[in-house]
Picture (cartoon, rainbow, N blue to C red):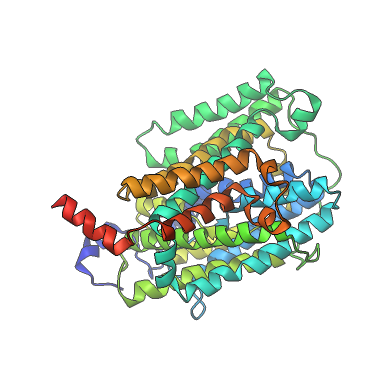
Length: 464
Protein backbone atom coordinates (compact mmCIF):
# COMPACT_ATOMS: atom_id res chain seq x y z
CA UNK A 1 0.00 0.00 0.00
CA UNK A 2 1.33 3.43 -1.01
CA UNK A 3 2.27 6.10 1.54
CA UNK A 4 2.68 8.69 -1.22
CA UNK A 5 1.44 12.02 0.27
CA UNK A 6 -0.23 12.91 -3.04
CA UNK A 7 -2.59 9.99 -2.52
CA UNK A 8 -3.55 10.60 1.10
CA UNK A 9 -6.74 12.38 -0.03
CA UNK A 10 -7.74 9.51 -2.36
CA UNK A 11 -7.09 6.98 0.40
CA UNK A 12 -9.09 8.93 2.99
CA UNK A 13 -12.07 9.07 0.61
CA UNK A 14 -12.01 5.29 0.10
CA UNK A 15 -14.36 3.11 2.13
CA UNK A 16 -12.45 -0.05 1.14
CA UNK A 17 -8.87 0.04 -0.14
CA UNK A 18 -7.30 -2.29 -2.72
CA UNK A 19 -6.59 -5.28 -0.42
CA UNK A 20 -9.59 -4.90 1.93
CA UNK A 21 -12.32 -7.56 1.99
CA UNK A 22 -15.76 -5.96 2.37
CA UNK A 23 -18.58 -8.08 3.89
CA UNK A 24 -20.52 -10.27 1.42
CA UNK A 25 -23.59 -7.99 1.07
CA UNK A 26 -21.51 -4.87 0.48
CA UNK A 27 -19.26 -6.71 -1.98
CA UNK A 28 -22.32 -7.92 -3.91
CA UNK A 29 -23.88 -4.45 -3.96
CA UNK A 30 -20.65 -2.83 -5.22
CA UNK A 31 -20.29 -5.64 -7.82
CA UNK A 32 -23.83 -4.94 -9.12
CA UNK A 33 -22.88 -1.26 -9.58
CA UNK A 34 -19.95 -2.36 -11.77
CA UNK A 35 -22.18 -4.73 -13.75
CA UNK A 36 -24.68 -1.91 -14.40
CA UNK A 37 -21.84 0.20 -15.77
CA UNK A 38 -20.37 -2.46 -18.04
CA UNK A 39 -23.12 -4.91 -19.12
CA UNK A 40 -24.38 -2.97 -22.15
CA UNK A 41 -20.81 -2.12 -23.21
CA UNK A 42 -19.83 -5.82 -23.17
CA UNK A 43 -22.80 -7.18 -25.15
CA UNK A 44 -23.03 -4.36 -27.72
CA UNK A 45 -19.84 -4.95 -29.81
CA UNK A 46 -20.55 -8.66 -30.51
CA UNK A 47 -24.23 -7.88 -31.08
CA UNK A 48 -23.46 -5.13 -33.63
CA UNK A 49 -20.82 -7.23 -35.43
CA UNK A 50 -23.12 -10.28 -35.65
CA UNK A 51 -26.18 -8.27 -36.75
CA UNK A 52 -24.22 -6.31 -39.35
CA UNK A 53 -22.58 -9.43 -40.80
CA UNK A 54 -25.86 -11.39 -40.80
CA UNK A 55 -24.51 -14.16 -38.55
CA UNK A 56 -27.19 -16.80 -37.72
CA UNK A 57 -29.02 -16.46 -34.37
CA UNK A 58 -27.48 -19.60 -32.79
CA UNK A 59 -23.92 -18.43 -33.57
CA UNK A 60 -24.70 -14.88 -32.41
CA UNK A 61 -26.05 -16.23 -29.13
CA UNK A 62 -22.90 -18.31 -28.62
CA UNK A 63 -20.56 -15.39 -29.44
CA UNK A 64 -22.39 -13.04 -27.01
CA UNK A 65 -22.26 -15.73 -24.29
CA UNK A 66 -18.53 -16.11 -24.85
CA UNK A 67 -18.07 -12.31 -24.67
CA UNK A 68 -19.63 -12.33 -21.20
CA UNK A 69 -17.61 -15.39 -20.15
CA UNK A 70 -14.27 -14.05 -21.46
CA UNK A 71 -14.96 -10.61 -19.92
CA UNK A 72 -15.17 -12.41 -16.57
CA UNK A 73 -12.01 -14.48 -17.18
CA UNK A 74 -10.05 -11.47 -18.53
CA UNK A 75 -11.07 -9.25 -15.60
CA UNK A 76 -10.03 -11.98 -13.15
CA UNK A 77 -6.60 -12.32 -14.82
CA UNK A 78 -6.03 -8.52 -14.71
CA UNK A 79 -7.09 -8.23 -11.05
CA UNK A 80 -5.49 -11.39 -9.64
CA UNK A 81 -2.17 -10.77 -11.43
CA UNK A 82 -0.32 -13.90 -12.53
CA UNK A 83 3.43 -13.16 -12.55
CA UNK A 84 3.92 -10.18 -14.88
CA UNK A 85 0.38 -10.51 -16.35
CA UNK A 86 -2.25 -8.11 -14.99
CA UNK A 87 -2.44 -4.92 -12.92
CA UNK A 88 -3.45 -6.32 -9.52
CA UNK A 89 -5.97 -3.43 -9.33
CA UNK A 90 -9.76 -3.45 -9.69
CA UNK A 91 -9.33 -3.39 -13.50
CA UNK A 92 -12.39 -4.53 -15.43
CA UNK A 93 -11.91 -5.77 -19.00
CA UNK A 94 -14.56 -6.19 -21.67
CA UNK A 95 -15.16 -6.71 -25.38
CA UNK A 96 -13.73 -3.61 -27.05
CA UNK A 97 -15.54 -1.16 -29.34
CA UNK A 98 -12.20 -0.17 -30.89
CA UNK A 99 -12.13 -3.20 -33.19
CA UNK A 100 -15.65 -2.87 -34.63
CA UNK A 101 -14.76 -0.87 -37.76
CA UNK A 102 -11.98 -3.12 -39.12
CA UNK A 103 -13.79 -6.39 -38.21
CA UNK A 104 -17.07 -5.32 -39.83
CA UNK A 105 -15.33 -4.00 -42.98
CA UNK A 106 -13.36 -7.25 -43.31
CA UNK A 107 -16.44 -9.43 -42.64
CA UNK A 108 -18.59 -7.58 -45.20
CA UNK A 109 -15.82 -7.88 -47.83
CA UNK A 110 -15.61 -11.65 -47.18
CA UNK A 111 -19.41 -11.99 -47.38
CA UNK A 112 -19.44 -10.16 -50.71
CA UNK A 113 -16.76 -12.59 -51.93
CA UNK A 114 -19.08 -15.50 -51.08
CA UNK A 115 -17.15 -16.78 -48.04
CA UNK A 116 -19.26 -18.94 -45.67
CA UNK A 117 -20.18 -17.64 -42.20
CA UNK A 118 -17.97 -20.27 -40.55
CA UNK A 119 -14.93 -19.42 -42.73
CA UNK A 120 -15.52 -15.68 -42.16
CA UNK A 121 -15.58 -16.12 -38.36
CA UNK A 122 -12.50 -18.39 -38.55
CA UNK A 123 -10.63 -15.67 -40.48
CA UNK A 124 -11.66 -12.92 -38.03
CA UNK A 125 -10.70 -14.92 -34.91
CA UNK A 126 -7.51 -16.26 -36.53
CA UNK A 127 -6.33 -12.80 -37.60
CA UNK A 128 -7.12 -11.36 -34.16
CA UNK A 129 -5.12 -14.20 -32.56
CA UNK A 130 -2.12 -13.34 -34.75
CA UNK A 131 -2.41 -9.59 -34.07
CA UNK A 132 -2.90 -9.85 -30.26
CA UNK A 133 0.83 -10.45 -29.51
CA UNK A 134 1.34 -6.81 -30.66
CA UNK A 135 0.39 -5.79 -27.10
CA UNK A 136 2.47 -8.51 -25.46
CA UNK A 137 5.58 -7.34 -27.33
CA UNK A 138 4.73 -3.68 -26.78
CA UNK A 139 4.40 -4.21 -23.02
CA UNK A 140 8.15 -4.86 -22.87
CA UNK A 141 8.96 -1.59 -24.72
CA UNK A 142 6.37 0.80 -23.32
CA UNK A 143 8.82 3.67 -22.86
CA UNK A 144 9.71 3.56 -26.59
CA UNK A 145 6.10 3.22 -27.78
CA UNK A 146 5.12 6.48 -26.10
CA UNK A 147 7.61 8.33 -28.32
CA UNK A 148 6.27 6.96 -31.62
CA UNK A 149 2.59 7.06 -30.67
CA UNK A 150 2.41 10.40 -28.89
CA UNK A 151 -0.79 11.73 -27.26
CA UNK A 152 -1.38 13.69 -30.50
CA UNK A 153 -1.34 10.46 -32.55
CA UNK A 154 -3.45 8.46 -30.08
CA UNK A 155 -5.95 11.35 -29.81
CA UNK A 156 -6.35 11.38 -33.60
CA UNK A 157 -6.82 7.59 -33.76
CA UNK A 158 -9.32 7.42 -30.86
CA UNK A 159 -11.32 10.28 -32.44
CA UNK A 160 -11.27 8.44 -35.79
CA UNK A 161 -12.50 5.22 -34.13
CA UNK A 162 -15.49 7.11 -32.73
CA UNK A 163 -16.26 9.10 -35.89
CA UNK A 164 -16.07 6.08 -38.22
CA UNK A 165 -18.40 4.10 -35.92
CA UNK A 166 -21.11 6.79 -35.75
CA UNK A 167 -22.24 5.70 -39.24
CA UNK A 168 -22.96 2.24 -37.76
CA UNK A 169 -25.03 3.79 -34.97
CA UNK A 170 -27.11 5.71 -37.51
CA UNK A 171 -27.60 2.56 -39.60
CA UNK A 172 -29.04 0.84 -36.51
CA UNK A 173 -31.30 3.83 -35.74
CA UNK A 174 -32.81 3.55 -39.23
CA UNK A 175 -33.52 -0.17 -38.68
CA UNK A 176 -30.24 -1.80 -39.72
CA UNK A 177 -29.05 -3.35 -42.99
CA UNK A 178 -32.18 -5.55 -43.14
CA UNK A 179 -34.38 -2.43 -43.24
CA UNK A 180 -32.23 -1.04 -46.08
CA UNK A 181 -32.93 -4.07 -48.27
CA UNK A 182 -36.64 -4.16 -47.37
CA UNK A 183 -37.13 -0.43 -48.04
CA UNK A 184 -38.21 0.44 -44.47
CA UNK A 185 -34.95 2.18 -43.51
CA UNK A 186 -35.65 5.35 -41.54
CA UNK A 187 -39.31 4.42 -40.90
CA UNK A 188 -40.89 6.78 -38.36
CA UNK A 189 -41.49 4.02 -35.77
CA UNK A 190 -37.77 3.16 -35.91
CA UNK A 191 -36.82 6.80 -35.39
CA UNK A 192 -39.38 7.14 -32.56
CA UNK A 193 -37.87 4.12 -30.76
CA UNK A 194 -34.28 5.38 -31.13
CA UNK A 195 -35.39 8.90 -30.16
CA UNK A 196 -37.04 7.58 -26.99
CA UNK A 197 -33.84 5.74 -25.98
CA UNK A 198 -31.72 8.83 -26.70
CA UNK A 199 -34.16 11.06 -24.82
CA UNK A 200 -34.09 8.84 -21.69
CA UNK A 201 -30.25 8.81 -21.72
CA UNK A 202 -30.16 12.63 -21.99
CA UNK A 203 -32.80 13.11 -19.24
CA UNK A 204 -31.05 10.70 -16.85
CA UNK A 205 -27.71 12.39 -17.47
CA UNK A 206 -29.22 15.70 -16.31
CA UNK A 207 -29.52 14.16 -12.84
CA UNK A 208 -27.03 15.12 -10.13
CA UNK A 209 -27.19 11.56 -8.76
CA UNK A 210 -24.19 9.59 -10.12
CA UNK A 211 -26.08 6.26 -9.81
CA UNK A 212 -28.84 7.57 -12.09
CA UNK A 213 -26.31 8.73 -14.68
CA UNK A 214 -24.40 5.46 -14.43
CA UNK A 215 -27.44 3.29 -15.22
CA UNK A 216 -28.87 5.59 -17.93
CA UNK A 217 -27.92 3.45 -20.96
CA UNK A 218 -29.17 0.22 -19.36
CA UNK A 219 -32.48 1.77 -18.24
CA UNK A 220 -32.98 3.41 -21.67
CA UNK A 221 -32.38 0.14 -23.53
CA UNK A 222 -34.73 -1.86 -21.26
CA UNK A 223 -37.42 0.83 -21.66
CA UNK A 224 -36.87 0.94 -25.45
CA UNK A 225 -37.13 -2.86 -25.70
CA UNK A 226 -40.38 -2.87 -23.67
CA UNK A 227 -41.76 -0.11 -25.92
CA UNK A 228 -40.77 -2.14 -29.02
CA UNK A 229 -42.59 -5.15 -27.52
CA UNK A 230 -45.70 -2.99 -27.00
CA UNK A 231 -45.41 -1.80 -30.64
CA UNK A 232 -45.12 -5.44 -31.83
CA UNK A 233 -41.55 -4.93 -33.07
CA UNK A 234 -39.91 -7.60 -30.92
CA UNK A 235 -38.78 -10.69 -32.85
CA UNK A 236 -40.37 -13.94 -31.56
CA UNK A 237 -38.16 -16.54 -29.88
CA UNK A 238 -37.24 -19.30 -32.31
CA UNK A 239 -36.52 -22.91 -31.40
CA UNK A 240 -35.54 -24.28 -28.03
CA UNK A 241 -32.70 -22.87 -25.96
CA UNK A 242 -29.77 -24.99 -24.85
CA UNK A 243 -29.64 -24.88 -21.06
CA UNK A 244 -25.88 -24.26 -20.90
CA UNK A 245 -23.28 -22.75 -23.26
CA UNK A 246 -19.93 -24.39 -22.65
CA UNK A 247 -16.79 -22.65 -23.94
CA UNK A 248 -15.48 -24.65 -26.91
CA UNK A 249 -11.97 -23.61 -28.07
CA UNK A 250 -11.62 -22.80 -31.79
CA UNK A 251 -15.20 -23.83 -32.57
CA UNK A 252 -14.99 -22.23 -36.04
CA UNK A 253 -11.37 -23.17 -36.70
CA UNK A 254 -8.72 -20.56 -37.58
CA UNK A 255 -8.24 -18.62 -40.80
CA UNK A 256 -6.48 -15.42 -41.86
CA UNK A 257 -7.54 -12.23 -43.64
CA UNK A 258 -4.61 -10.12 -44.86
CA UNK A 259 -6.65 -6.91 -45.15
CA UNK A 260 -7.66 -7.16 -41.48
CA UNK A 261 -4.19 -7.77 -40.00
CA UNK A 262 -2.60 -4.27 -40.20
CA UNK A 263 -5.75 -2.41 -39.01
CA UNK A 264 -5.96 -4.81 -36.04
CA UNK A 265 -2.28 -4.34 -35.16
CA UNK A 266 -2.80 -0.57 -35.20
CA UNK A 267 -5.94 -0.77 -33.04
CA UNK A 268 -4.09 -3.06 -30.58
CA UNK A 269 -1.38 -0.38 -30.28
CA UNK A 270 -4.00 2.26 -29.46
CA UNK A 271 -5.82 -0.10 -27.09
CA UNK A 272 -2.52 -0.54 -25.23
CA UNK A 273 -2.20 3.23 -24.83
CA UNK A 274 -5.80 3.43 -23.63
CA UNK A 275 -4.95 0.68 -21.13
CA UNK A 276 -2.10 2.84 -19.84
CA UNK A 277 -4.53 5.74 -19.36
CA UNK A 278 -7.14 3.53 -17.67
CA UNK A 279 -4.61 1.91 -15.33
CA UNK A 280 -3.31 5.35 -14.35
CA UNK A 281 -6.89 6.45 -13.59
CA UNK A 282 -7.60 3.25 -11.61
CA UNK A 283 -4.38 3.71 -9.59
CA UNK A 284 -5.36 7.32 -8.94
CA UNK A 285 -8.92 6.59 -7.71
CA UNK A 286 -7.67 3.57 -5.71
CA UNK A 287 -5.12 5.68 -3.79
CA UNK A 288 -2.26 3.73 -5.35
CA UNK A 289 1.00 5.23 -6.76
CA UNK A 290 0.93 6.85 -10.21
CA UNK A 291 4.69 6.95 -10.59
CA UNK A 292 7.64 4.78 -9.67
CA UNK A 293 8.44 1.06 -10.11
CA UNK A 294 5.11 -0.37 -8.76
CA UNK A 295 3.16 1.86 -11.14
CA UNK A 296 5.37 1.01 -14.15
CA UNK A 297 5.09 -2.70 -13.38
CA UNK A 298 1.27 -2.34 -13.33
CA UNK A 299 1.26 -0.53 -16.68
CA UNK A 300 3.32 -3.29 -18.27
CA UNK A 301 1.09 -5.91 -16.61
CA UNK A 302 -2.03 -4.22 -17.99
CA UNK A 303 -0.79 -4.16 -21.59
CA UNK A 304 0.60 -7.71 -21.38
CA UNK A 305 -2.71 -8.85 -19.82
CA UNK A 306 -4.65 -7.13 -22.62
CA UNK A 307 -2.71 -9.12 -25.22
CA UNK A 308 -3.07 -12.44 -23.34
CA UNK A 309 -6.79 -11.86 -22.79
CA UNK A 310 -7.46 -10.89 -26.42
CA UNK A 311 -5.70 -14.10 -27.48
CA UNK A 312 -7.97 -16.06 -25.12
CA UNK A 313 -10.98 -14.25 -26.61
CA UNK A 314 -9.97 -15.38 -30.13
CA UNK A 315 -9.47 -18.98 -28.97
CA UNK A 316 -12.91 -18.99 -27.31
CA UNK A 317 -14.72 -17.51 -30.32
CA UNK A 318 -15.22 -13.89 -29.43
CA UNK A 319 -13.70 -10.48 -30.19
CA UNK A 320 -10.69 -8.69 -28.61
CA UNK A 321 -10.96 -7.13 -25.15
CA UNK A 322 -9.66 -3.94 -23.54
CA UNK A 323 -9.80 -2.19 -20.17
CA UNK A 324 -13.09 -0.42 -19.35
CA UNK A 325 -12.72 3.16 -18.13
CA UNK A 326 -16.34 3.56 -16.92
CA UNK A 327 -15.56 1.33 -13.93
CA UNK A 328 -13.13 3.94 -12.60
CA UNK A 329 -16.19 6.14 -12.18
CA UNK A 330 -17.82 3.38 -10.11
CA UNK A 331 -14.76 3.14 -7.81
CA UNK A 332 -14.86 6.91 -7.36
CA UNK A 333 -18.62 6.92 -6.66
CA UNK A 334 -18.76 3.98 -4.26
CA UNK A 335 -15.39 4.53 -2.56
CA UNK A 336 -14.74 0.80 -2.99
CA UNK A 337 -11.37 0.06 -4.63
CA UNK A 338 -11.16 -3.51 -3.29
CA UNK A 339 -10.23 -6.07 -5.95
CA UNK A 340 -12.16 -8.58 -3.80
CA UNK A 341 -15.29 -6.87 -5.23
CA UNK A 342 -13.77 -7.25 -8.70
CA UNK A 343 -13.59 -11.03 -8.21
CA UNK A 344 -17.36 -10.98 -7.57
CA UNK A 345 -17.87 -9.07 -10.85
CA UNK A 346 -15.68 -11.56 -12.75
CA UNK A 347 -17.51 -14.56 -11.23
CA UNK A 348 -20.98 -13.20 -12.06
CA UNK A 349 -19.92 -12.47 -15.67
CA UNK A 350 -18.51 -15.99 -16.14
CA UNK A 351 -21.73 -17.51 -14.81
CA UNK A 352 -23.87 -15.26 -17.05
CA UNK A 353 -21.81 -16.39 -20.05
CA UNK A 354 -22.71 -20.03 -19.38
CA UNK A 355 -26.47 -19.41 -19.76
CA UNK A 356 -27.53 -18.88 -23.40
CA UNK A 357 -30.93 -17.54 -22.28
CA UNK A 358 -29.19 -14.23 -21.43
CA UNK A 359 -27.55 -13.83 -24.84
CA UNK A 360 -30.76 -14.94 -26.61
CA UNK A 361 -32.73 -12.21 -24.84
CA UNK A 362 -30.00 -9.70 -25.68
CA UNK A 363 -30.24 -10.68 -29.35
CA UNK A 364 -33.87 -9.62 -29.43
CA UNK A 365 -33.04 -5.98 -28.67
CA UNK A 366 -34.40 -4.19 -31.77
CA UNK A 367 -31.84 -2.38 -33.97
CA UNK A 368 -33.29 1.15 -33.40
CA UNK A 369 -33.05 0.66 -29.60
CA UNK A 370 -29.43 -0.43 -29.99
CA UNK A 371 -28.80 2.48 -32.36
CA UNK A 372 -30.11 5.09 -29.90
CA UNK A 373 -27.70 3.82 -27.24
CA UNK A 374 -24.68 3.20 -29.50
CA UNK A 375 -24.90 6.69 -30.98
CA UNK A 376 -24.10 7.96 -27.48
CA UNK A 377 -21.38 5.32 -26.93
CA UNK A 378 -19.66 5.96 -30.27
CA UNK A 379 -19.97 9.72 -29.81
CA UNK A 380 -18.33 9.26 -26.39
CA UNK A 381 -15.35 7.49 -28.00
CA UNK A 382 -14.89 10.42 -30.42
CA UNK A 383 -15.27 12.87 -27.51
CA UNK A 384 -12.60 10.94 -25.52
CA UNK A 385 -10.26 11.37 -28.50
CA UNK A 386 -11.00 15.11 -28.58
CA UNK A 387 -10.24 15.27 -24.84
CA UNK A 388 -6.82 13.64 -25.42
CA UNK A 389 -6.15 16.16 -28.21
CA UNK A 390 -7.26 19.09 -26.04
CA UNK A 391 -4.46 18.32 -23.55
CA UNK A 392 -1.89 18.83 -26.33
CA UNK A 393 -0.58 22.19 -27.45
CA UNK A 394 -2.48 22.53 -30.74
CA UNK A 395 0.10 24.59 -32.62
CA UNK A 396 0.44 24.87 -36.42
CA UNK A 397 2.30 21.53 -36.60
CA UNK A 398 -0.34 19.65 -34.56
CA UNK A 399 -3.24 21.14 -36.57
CA UNK A 400 -1.52 20.25 -39.86
CA UNK A 401 -0.99 16.62 -38.73
CA UNK A 402 -4.66 16.45 -37.59
CA UNK A 403 -5.88 17.90 -40.91
CA UNK A 404 -4.01 15.37 -43.08
CA UNK A 405 -4.81 12.41 -40.78
CA UNK A 406 -8.54 13.16 -40.48
CA UNK A 407 -8.73 13.84 -44.21
CA UNK A 408 -7.18 10.45 -45.04
CA UNK A 409 -9.02 8.49 -42.36
CA UNK A 410 -12.52 9.88 -42.84
CA UNK A 411 -12.11 10.09 -46.61
CA UNK A 412 -11.19 6.43 -47.01
CA UNK A 413 -13.85 5.26 -44.54
CA UNK A 414 -16.47 7.10 -46.69
CA UNK A 415 -15.08 6.06 -50.09
CA UNK A 416 -12.98 2.88 -49.73
CA UNK A 417 -13.42 2.14 -53.46
CA UNK A 418 -10.83 4.86 -54.22
CA UNK A 419 -8.21 2.16 -53.57
CA UNK A 420 -9.66 -0.37 -56.02
CA UNK A 421 -6.81 -0.05 -58.58
CA UNK A 422 -4.06 -0.05 -55.95
CA UNK A 423 -1.75 -3.08 -55.43
CA UNK A 424 -3.21 -5.69 -53.07
CA UNK A 425 -0.74 -4.81 -50.28
CA UNK A 426 -1.75 -1.11 -50.27
CA UNK A 427 -5.44 -2.09 -50.34
CA UNK A 428 -4.95 -4.47 -47.42
CA UNK A 429 -3.12 -1.91 -45.29
CA UNK A 430 -5.23 1.18 -46.00
CA UNK A 431 -8.71 -0.26 -46.56
CA UNK A 432 -9.79 0.73 -43.02
CA UNK A 433 -10.24 4.45 -42.28
CA UNK A 434 -8.73 3.93 -38.82
CA UNK A 435 -5.61 2.33 -40.33
CA UNK A 436 -5.30 4.96 -43.07
CA UNK A 437 -5.68 7.89 -40.66
CA UNK A 438 -3.60 6.25 -37.92
CA UNK A 439 -0.64 5.37 -40.15
CA UNK A 440 -0.80 8.89 -41.63
CA UNK A 441 -0.71 10.40 -38.12
CA UNK A 442 2.28 8.24 -37.08
CA UNK A 443 4.24 9.08 -40.26
CA UNK A 444 3.39 12.80 -40.11
CA UNK A 445 4.39 12.92 -36.44
CA UNK A 446 7.80 11.50 -37.40
CA UNK A 447 8.25 13.56 -40.60
CA UNK A 448 7.17 17.01 -39.41
CA UNK A 449 10.08 18.98 -37.91
CA UNK A 450 10.46 19.63 -34.18
CA UNK A 451 10.81 16.53 -32.04
CA UNK A 452 8.71 16.45 -28.88
CA UNK A 453 11.51 17.65 -26.51
CA UNK A 454 12.26 20.60 -28.88
CA UNK A 455 8.56 21.36 -29.15
CA UNK A 456 8.32 21.37 -25.35
CA UNK A 457 11.27 23.79 -25.10
CA UNK A 458 9.69 26.07 -27.70
CA UNK A 459 6.40 25.94 -25.82
CA UNK A 460 8.14 26.95 -22.56
CA UNK A 461 9.93 29.82 -24.31
CA UNK A 462 6.63 31.03 -25.82
CA UNK A 463 4.88 30.69 -22.48
CA UNK A 464 7.71 32.60 -20.82
